[in-house]
Length: 359
Image (cartoon, rainbow, N blue to C red; front, side):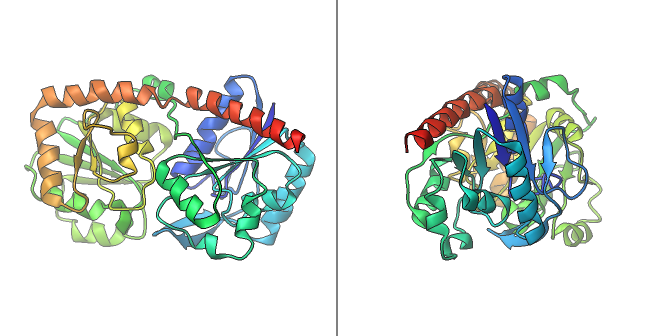
């Protein structure tokens, strides 16, 4: 097949959907299918096989800021790219997000698969015509039951449950970046719903020898750096490359995911499990998609800094418990391999093409 994957979010901005789009494209290309990604890019495309559609416009949504491109210039570039490429099937991620995915739906001449990622509500569903646009999708998929429920409430329809994938070989190839002191790693946008403030409060309850790597940035970065500037155990790394991210996750003693809400699927948990690093995370419905019975990670009540500190300290002091989580976590991560996800989507693409021909 000749496959076109469209992301509404800028590929040069860090984000879960963007990583899924790029990883899936690599897996599909490795399986022998000609695959191209269409998306906004604020700078050079991050890999080959990408058609940049212009710069993004930061837009507030779902308690975060999304780097989308709903402007007329992006629309024209999308129309031109779809006309020139002649794809057999289009795969739209967050298909109702303003920008190139909506443009592809308006054109609607190619079999279309749509994947919903977000959970927790969206103002996009209140826009007139959104439900009609959704009818132009041949097969709808969602990465979790929460994401499917949100989409169903917004535009109706039936959704096939898939998952977010992880490229296991990338973790195996990277050498761990280790610290001489017990180290906790965090990566995520510095905004309220990600719970970084809870983790920083938990750090005040941990021994002096424990260190914390804080990766990425966000609207809270400067405020939090000022508030905790005297705590020399906290290392503010800013945005890091994908290779450094993997190396630090792999080299940390514990990986912490203290999110408070708005998470439909715990792909960041799977990444840590793939890196063979024990995980402490908030007990959210989205993370329960990954952690089934507690054998793969320690889960604590969202927003409870005392419980978070206790769980982190328990893993730092009990290597036997950490080793058990690592073994169970790696087994769980292998069930979410990107290669397996590519096979699932290839079946969906084939059915979407057949359904469009039949209609």
